[in-house]
Image (cartoon, rainbow over all chains, first blue to last red; front, top):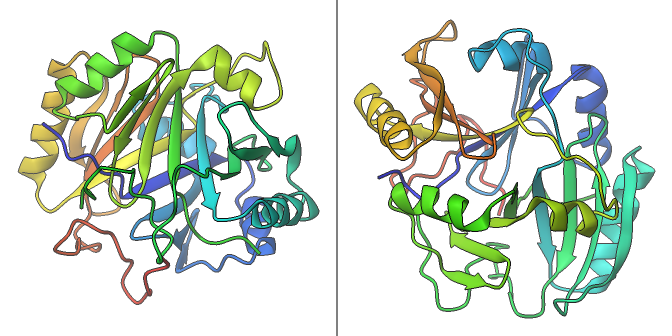
Length: 146
Length: 146
């Protein structure tokens, strides 16, 4: 079996400087930046930016056209106002608006935007999923899996 | 600014039962399974499986063809043996092998596989990134961002 765990999310990008600038415009600060790769510390895990061509080669399929959109990253918030603010900040930083935050059928409030390479972020408030004080998301009735 | 945080990763899938079975074959156990969606508790965050068509609509672009591969999820381990074991378990569960784990140029040991919908997972050992006792990844010199 494998652990129910993700320690690193890597985004394949076509222009590393452009992508780094986008995330920095959100207020993010890299923990490491080396030739061809930038790493941001997140919540007990890491987000990396890495050239899309390099990523395809690293995956063992040089030349492959890698796609985006079917894997999304969400940031959950405690309030609708925080969701709106996060969405607005991203669009102000140059994100492509996909869906302005709105009330959704499952009872929450959710919007989407895409980063400069089309990587999709959701910003959401789910009243049934209260966040922990430290921003962690532990599902009701679940145990954390660290 | 937005927090340097991800609370939910959603994978758009074409056959929810098939995808659920794949992750269960890795030893994963859902914390919630409702009509059309399955959630696994991970390390202070959540992995969701959701229909790809539904996901496109949720993103505000019904009918869009969502792609995979340019955003990868990595599991870091302490040893090469653990990396090999995780890769082997995934392939045994039906994953598509992309790259058998091998020593790589940056000094670590890394392999890749794809899940039934082409979502790409890396399994890796990075000698410069020791894991915390609880499996968290905090970059050397960085503070956790919770």
